[in-house]
Image 1 (cartoon, rainbow, N blue to C red):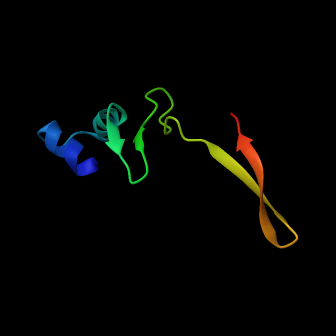
Image 2 (tube, rainbow, N blue to C red):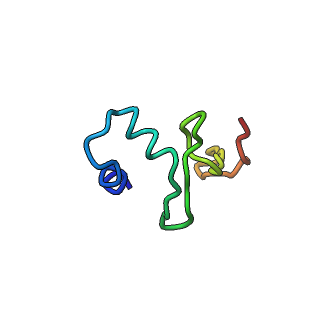
Length: 66
């Protein structure tokens, strides 16, 4: 992903320039495609799930909403 964007830049971009190039793309992952939120820089569409340890085992609590 980074190498592809560096090649497309046609030179060595600044850190901010590389960030801008990465933020505009959508990338194919092993499980599903992913992209970055241009405003916040976080991954789009990825949920965070919460687990607790109960009785020595992991127990699913639910999805965390921000």
